[in-house]
Structure formats: C-alpha cells, structure tokens
Amino acid sequence: MHVKRELLLGAFNLFLDRYVPPKHLQANLEAMQAEADSLFKMIHENAPQIDFEPWLKLVIKYLEVNMETRAWPTVSEVAKAVQATSKQTYITAPSAVEAAIDPTRIIVQNIKSGRAVGEGHLYGRLPAEMLSRGQITEKDLDRYRIMLHEKKTRIWGEAAANKAKQENEARHEAAMKMGADTKRERRHLELPIKRMTGEKGETGYET
Image 1 (cartoon, rainbow, N blue to C red):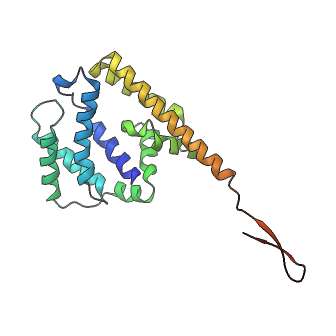
Image 2: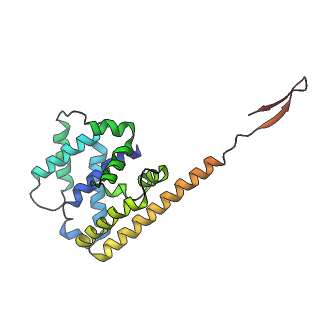
C-alpha cells in the first residue's frame, strides 16, 4: 500500500534528520541516498500490515537508546531494532486507527498545526493528493520546504541540497500533473452508447 509506505518513510526520515550521515558518504549524494534507502528497506519490509506507526515508534526508541554516536544507524543496527521490537507487544494508538480510516487526516492535522512532518509529505504523490482535495495549500507546504532545504544545506552543503530540492520539485510537479491528467480523464469519460430500435418501434439505449 502506497500510503503505508509514505507514512513510514515520512516518520523514518524525521528520525534520520536528527542525525548526520556517515562521514565517508557526505561527499557522495548518490551513495548517501543508497544508504538511506537500505535503512528504510529494512523498516518497510518488516513493518506489520496494521499498527505500523506505533511499531515504528518502538523501533526508533530502541535505536535511540542503543546508538552510541550521532551518525545514522547501520543496516545491522536497524535489523537488531526490528528484531527486538517484533518480540514486544504493543497497543494500537488512536492515531493508527484514524490513519487506517483516512491516512491523510493525521498528516493534514500535523501540517496545519505546525507539527513535524516527513519529507514524503512535502513533495510527490501524497501531498499532491491532499492539495487536489483542498485539504492543504502550497503555502502550508512552503514553510516546511524552506526549513527542510536550510537543514539539508547545513548537513550536506549548498550544492547537494540544491540538487535534492530540484529533484523533489520535479517529482512533485510530475505528481501534480498526473493527478490533473487523471481528473481530466474521469471528467471526460463517457460510456459507449448504442442506439437501438425495438420490435414495436420503441427507442432505447444499450450500454
């Protein structure tokens, strides 16, 4: 499910944002992205189908307690956190229930109230969907995007941050265009109608 992936990705990116990429990766944006993808893959592939948000909170809590540096965790450390968390029992949080009913509801509330949101909630398919519904505005997103860019500039450097911003903007523009094209197709969809004349001269239509 795309929404599950977006929610997990947003929350996990917020976690990574609090730490710094390993030094040997900081000069290589592609390698840095590949490492982040590997870490998230471990999360995504092991997350439960339901209650995945409270599950991820426990994984992150385990990492926070056991990590010894301010650098990103390794894949091995994430795997240990996932394994440890899978042995625990947790109760469904109210936010997880609400997200199952309307996955965008919690994200919209967080954006409107100024609470932290993940990068996946600022660019791409999910925010494009919320924009098309009128749940948020580009202005709501822009304040977060500015802060995100400033943070990346501090951590990655100006060139890498600018490149990431351009890629995000292109992805978001493509998502918005895809949404507009889908709406247009639905608006112009017509059922094929064939005119028929019955035996007694009645006029009817067959779809």
